Length: 397
Image 1 (spheres, rainbow, N blue to C red):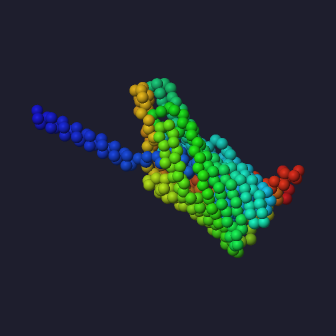
Image 2 (image 1 turned 180 degrees about the horizontal axis):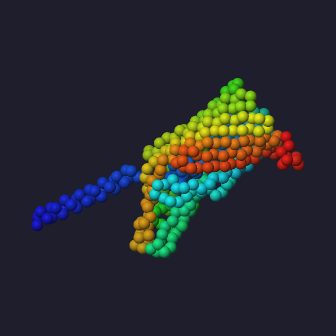
Image 3 (image 1 turned 90 degrees about the vertical axis):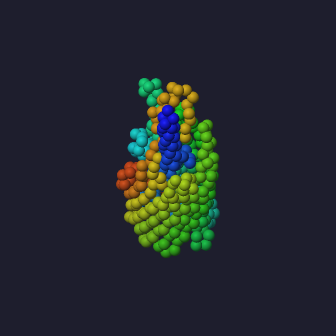
């Protein structure tokens, strides 16, 4: 009898050790979210909007290229205008398949708005402007929870939009152009996912940052740099809070311009490890070329963006109060697994200069096949005094 009790005790101990070890293994191997799910850098491969159609065609290289109002979206020092102008831009992204190995949903970005802004010369050496843009947008289409033994279901559409308001000042100081962006962001979430509850959590969080930039040119050589410092913010919601670190971002660019041709290379470093130690820092490399012929400028480029995390993650969880609800949620995964998401994208586009402004069209297509993202953009940049000319829609130069 004593041997039987001893055997039972050992068996129970082994089971407890196994369960505890499994729990520890799962905890070690599964990412605890450091921020709301859809704003994590793993989703940048689709959520990121490559602002500025004029630069997208040449690989979205911006740091070492002087521009009009659209330049405010990247390196503030490259804003250079002689006349007051405005920019209007649309961005189209077809839906893509699930990046999560455990899911079968799609991601979409149904609102095509990109940015709108104005810029003007404020003095002999100073330019300034205001820009509203949507640097990120993503809708999880859809997150479904079967209820009533599968007879019904609750369908959710988790959404993340990053609304950005930018004020820019730039001017010539000796042989350099210096600039600064005052950036105010609204991180807008709808249907935030918390495993175990049907509460529709809609939250908007505000952040502020300063982005200095510099541009230098000598002969055919052009250099540019912009730095977005890290920032911290708390994102509270009904079932907890996130202490979010928005990572440091450093971008440098080089341009070689001769006659009507230009070759550009940008390198972007994001300290994603500051958001979570599980993330790798990310180096994004962009290369672009453009050639002007008459009033047209034709462009080609390449963008290489590696992923920052591959592996499992866990959703924030709430324990339902009734056994019936617990049964519904038992069939819903409490997390997922991020697949490898390295991207290699080809870009092409053109800009037509019609004297009073510029019309740009551009497209980006991933060719690596891991995150099959496509982005098509169009923008119209016009001098404000062009509207006084009744023939400006004819694009007479």
